[in-house]
Length: 162
Length: 162
Image (cartoon, one colour):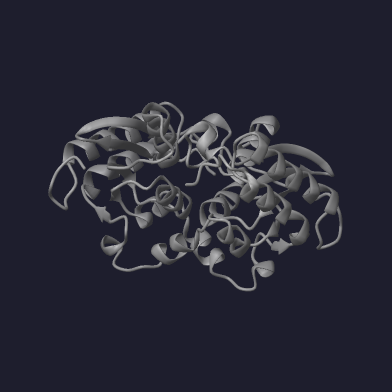
């Protein structure tokens, strides 16, 4: 971690905010993110959903992918994530998979919703049971056939766990 | 949508399962996914987390990105997602952002956990309050400064909403 305190480094958050402002001029959404290790920025991202035709290209996901590529690791051990906005459920879960030390954010989900970026429906939907009744129905099929992949996985001696 | 019934197309799920099995031999995780529109596969993905050093490269995210790139859209309108395994919180939220018609899966989260891929901790963590007490602490800072990006966004006349 880049500092001892529980509080984040304002200079690093300002870098994330600068990316969020620059992103608007570049045709992206108003969101920025940096990944920091030992006081150094090791990854940067801005929202590129419409620029790249990629619904997963939120600032945090872009920054996590950038940092992991630079660090040559699929984990962000000892890193902090600075996001200009409170992470949506996708980005928060992505952060958990990346396993940084801490996540800092500046504006709130309510602030983003006020300008048209509302992720509250995702939280509400993910909690709805049964899942088949969600706005995007979620249904199971062919479970037995799918287990073959796990059999192949457990039989593989050189597998990399994560 | 590729068919009228509420049930998915077994042939398409078998494509996702085939990708999950092939992935293991290729050094990836045992997960596969296809995106289908009008009975045609428009996107494919397998877990590439350790292969690509990308913690967000779950099969569903890879398939969504592939389909959106091919379709030239940041949305998957009228598409169905077939995942060999029940989507983790990141992939489920990514699916909501992509807005497909339906999501089908084969093996369960419990099946995946049995071979070492456990996402239950993410669900538990995301619900924990206050967020500063989570395993990965989540903290707010510099909200007022971050609002500048939203001011730039609302002032921009040619913005693309999504």
